[in-house]
Image (cartoon, rainbow, N blue to C red; front, side, top):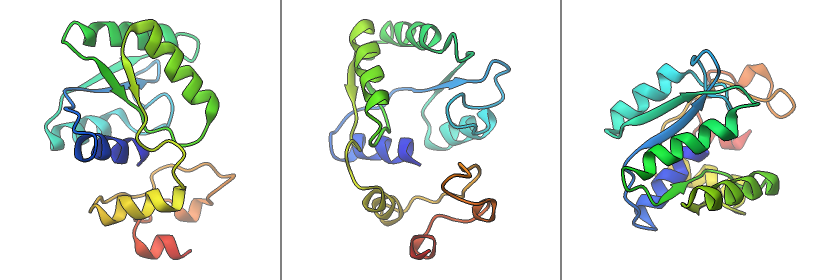
Length: 156
């Protein structure tokens, strides 16, 4: 959800042209490395919005190296920045800024330090449709799986 909203805000507010989506997958390529979302689903989403997706396989150990390789390949296509959906985990931001500096691209974090509830409301108001397909059990129980993220979801 945060990646979609970051994408939207980068286009709508910051007038950034998005040429590619980049997803780092699991070593077998079936899932997104960070969020566990099906790589096939991400491919379908990219097709729906009409932007090519670059999917790279990695282990946790090779993640940074593979990410840098992917960014280097995209730089050959004149990519100058990366848009990230991070909100408030400083360690993630530090990693993004370091790796972007090392690869020579500009990091764009349009959601940084925004309140999560505000972001969810923006997401819904912008007309996005999303269903909970995976969740951290520390924050949401399995009864949330399959629920649409809408105004009723926000009332819980």
